[in-house]
Length: 422
Image 1: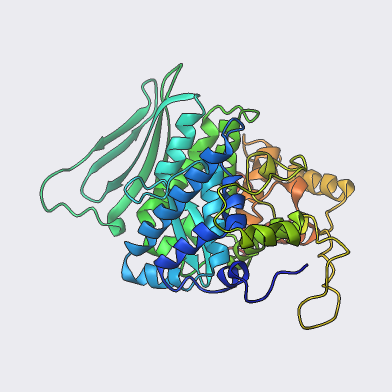
Image 2: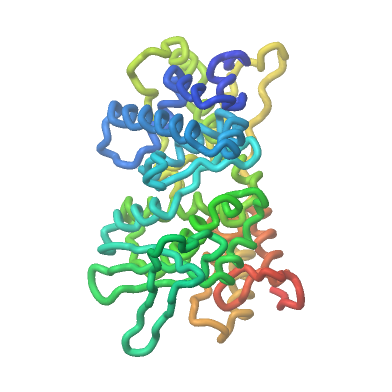
């Protein structure tokens, strides 16, 4: 049994949002509400609690888009309902809010694709939730303010914040951003980035009309959090640690990942729809006013992202059952499920790691594994062991072209000019 092309579910997924009020249609689409509801972290949450949080998130999204500045709102209204729902699922998977005053997360349009973007307050919240630090402070210094970094036996940061009337705190005047972490034990730790370092990170973004253009200060503060996160002790076996890592993974889309890769996420919810079978979902559409949530999937999580409540790329989701009916009006069987992408062999990866180690010999105190993780995070958005052949080749080509420094794994603005071959 296939989904009719003019069904409310298909029309919502494929059409542009057009107006924030259209979000209320989600209240009548139990399958999509159920998909978002299952993303909330916390095994002890009841289904009624998950649904309540999801409906509240939908209301927050309505207010968020309605109150956005006219230019951003117009772009969000061009985004497909499918990508809007995926953004809500990503927000739910981190347990964050869409209330603008909190700044924990944002909806960012890329063409017709809406994506979730964790704000720097959201990262601070996730860091605090790990229970490994007492507090986190993130701020920016502007032209005209005294800012200095001390070393020696009493290291630290001196920043005289000006509060006089008329002082210009425009993003164009930012000279530094910094993060101070007050540890539960031991002295505070900190991380500083100057304007040149911030702009180097910005240069790595492949989105010419992305968040860096509209939210430079926010992205700059988030950059120093991403860099300073390595100084924070993290228990990755805990859910709070997994949520922070997942937020970093999702955020890679705003730090150099192609828009096309973000658009792939639109297929995630549809894969879940197919995985559960058309008949069950069609019954839910017919009973749109039911109070029950869709049943959870039976499969055990197979990846880190699934284990933290996140959605998976379409290629990793189960394909429709072979006995599915033909597509409406065609008489032909449905197209086959996409094949699993090929992964590099262990031998290829081992050779790659050996070449990296040879190139970096004696150049930095940063471990080779951490260097590789840093470049993977920026270039392909996943660990090396999870890369496809195509992603691995892109990663290898970026290093060969000299697009990264070999000491810390930072993007080089003038990549490709006289750099070492990898």
